[in-house]
Length: 267
Image (cartoon, rainbow, N blue to C red):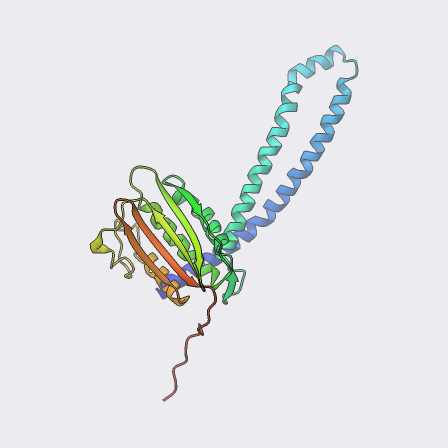
């Protein structure tokens, strides 16, 4: 688990670095497209003025050759689609930075868990979008004291596992959240194949996996369980008969217990 945790930290650091490097060129491309849109509008206004003047035969021939009417219609569309594409890339880069959270300190801090889930969903969308629809049933959640990057790792493991549980038919992953007293709860439900009762007690064991050899380390749920325990919370699973599986995470809103490891007293 320590090796896996270190590996995940390295991947997060790499992701944050890549996101930062991508963010700069994407920023000025986005800005340039906005400026270009303004320039195109000005040129179209001038073209309107030219079209109001009498045209020579050569000018009419050139107008037909380059199909000005088509250009007037297509150029704004191209600019708009390009700007939408760049905006989507900027959103993905921001989600990548939010997911890794390497740029923030690895200290306990209050975080919006809904934002963490949304960022994680965008990061793992390629794992999910071809297998299942995602339904969000968010309740009211207060800011929760946690290690945000580690909680995002838990969300990623639960979401990817839910996607992998789907069979041949397209499934559904439902995310529910709510609060009760001094705790919050999050449920990740899938309508996949479910977990056989005889395996339900083993799924949190390190290296236990039902995936084929080479397709799973068996550390995802074990690591998630450890992270939730570190947050003085609870990660549980219940089997929906004929409906799949529900993973439930319960976390305290504030960490009242000292989270620092205790020092071993000297003899």
